[in-house]
Length: 395
Image 1 (cartoon, rainbow, N blue to C red):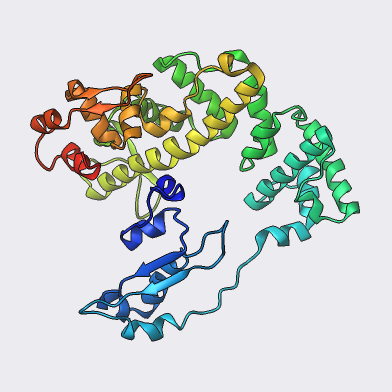
Image 2 (image 1 turned 90 degrees about the vertical axis):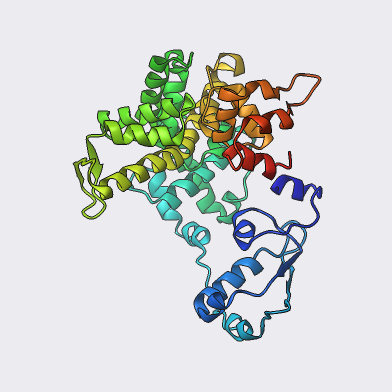
């Protein structure tokens, strides 16, 4: 939707407020229907919901303002909400970047290794500055962030930053990879660079043993898990996810084989009691969060960074396997990936390949993916996941 809208293939979108707030659709005009009485009666929610929607009006590259048109309906209008919406408080925006730049000594201390536990904003801003220092050392070009400092401080930062890069042995790191991954500290870049040079650390196959060894290397660099048991659990979940196991099966296995669980009240690890509903719910949430927060986000981000370094060192053909996109799709099966790219969910795509593959003609150099909708609908149950998604895709 975002892509088609930005290309003006879609001119008008009728949607719920939830969808509009959840996607990137900068637009000139936003039309809003009146809120239900329940929302209007809650002054705080009424004001928040309205300005959440109104804030979507305005295209950043064209203009910073937009039009908010409040529509009345036959049985509802904005008269009761108007006063509550107008009570909006002034918002004070904390400018973390400029305030950090003004305290350049913190950045110098980070470069000099004098900070034991640097904050995330210091790490990220320092990484951005180091990226500009790398460019300056290579091409003599002063970047936008370095230009915000006066000349004396700027060259103090460049001198200290160069020593920092030399000390961490990443003066030769790929500049694009470094600049695109400023969420990582210099020490992590250094560990990743060192491991990426070792061809034995590359992923060569999708075998369980190779994937587990590869994930152990990733964990050594990025510190995702702290104990062997915890790391093993992450490896098992990740490999099961790549093998196309459903979320239901992953949850069932977590309940079946787990020995401990984080108690939802004390938040301590306790012995897992399969008869305790609270423990079951906690285990379900643990499995879901492992997939959503770790496997498809943190782990994917780390692997993408490591693979970029492998590419920069060994070249595309000798960089090993890039596991990152497979983590996003939750499968190693290219046919399932193709169906997901077509618009099906992972769950529906897996079921189609497992039970109804004959209904699909996959793309070639000459043809695009084709689905025999009539044949597929005849084989599935009404209101099933596949049936609903066929309707959503207008097939």
